[in-house]
Image (cartoon, rainbow, N blue to C red; front, side, top):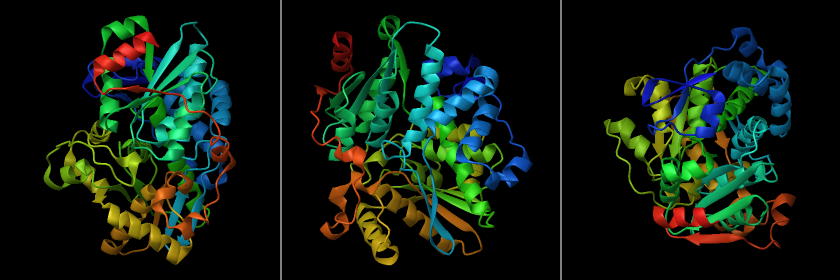
Length: 434
C-alpha cells in the first residue's frame, strides 16, 4: 500500500511509515494512492460473510502485502471480536449499534485494529513507541483499552478539563500501566493542536518515537470502513439494497470512512453528516466558505470539534470539488434542545435509549426522510453506549439503562491524571520530564 499527503500528491510512503508517522511533515493527511474497487460479486453477496471475513477482505484489498494475508487474518480476528448489529426501529429506519466493544464506543474498531497493526510492525525493533491521542470523550477510552498492556508502547491521552462525562473520565484515567492521562485546561481543539504541534517538533521527534492514535492516523480510518460493509450485509439479508447512512460527525473520521467504503464500491444512496452546533461543515456546504470556529461544549461532547481534521480527506476523496461532495453528503445541525427532545422521543415511541450523538444522527435521518420520501433504508449510527451520559436522561430513563460490567469495574479504581496548561511549552515540558 502506498500513500500520499493531501498537501503533496507526489509523496509516496509505505503503510508502515504512514502508521508510525501519523502526519506527513507538510501537515497534510495520508491517503491511499489507489483506492481499490471490491469485486461486485463479493459486495452483492455480503450477507454470506461474517464481520471478520468482511473486515479481512476490505483490509487486505487496501493494505495488500504490507501485512501478509495469514498475519492480517489473525490481526483482524483478535481486534474485531465483537458484533455491530443493525437493529430495526420501524419500517425504513434502523440503528447500527457500534458500542458493543470493550470501551462501549465505535472507536473500538479503529483503536483495537491500529494497536495490533502497530504492535505487529513494532516487533521488528526495540524502540519504545509513544502514542499521542487527543480526545473529546470516546477516543481516549478506546485507545486506552486498545493499547493497555501492549508491549513496547506508551500512550499519552490529552482530554479537555471538565468536558468529558464522568464515565469517560474513568475510562481515561484508571488504567495505569502504559496508559497516561493528561487533563488540559482548554477544549478538544486545544488538545488536538498540542498533539499536532508535538508531531512537528524536531526536538521531540529526535528523542521519542511518536505516533498518533487519533483518526488522523490511516490505521484508524481503515477499520472504520468495516462496519459500513457489514451493515449493508445485514440489510441484504433482509432484501434491502438502497441505503442512507446518518453519521454523528465531529472530527469527520467516521463519515470519512463511510465515504472511503463508498469509493471502494459500497452502494450508498446518501450520507448524512449530523452535527451539533459545532457546524463548520454544514456552513461550508451551504456557502462554500470553510471557516473553523472555537468549539462549543454540548451534550454530544465527542462531536464538539470546531475544526474537523478529517474534512480534508473527504474533500480529497472527491478531488476537492465541493459540488461532488454535496451530491453524496447532506449536512444537518441540531441544538442541545433538539437533542434532548430526540432522546425523549426515541424512548417514548420506540423504547430505545440513545446517547446524545446517536439521537442527533436519528434527527438527521428523520429530516432526510421527510425531505426525500421513497423506498430506501435509513440507518443511523449509534456511536456510544447511553450509560456514558447519565446526566442527559431523566431518572426514569436512567433507571432502565443496563450498566455493563466493564464500567462498574472502574468505579472503585484510583484516578491517575496529570494537569497541564494548554500552552505547548507546558505540554512539552511535561512530556520531556515524564
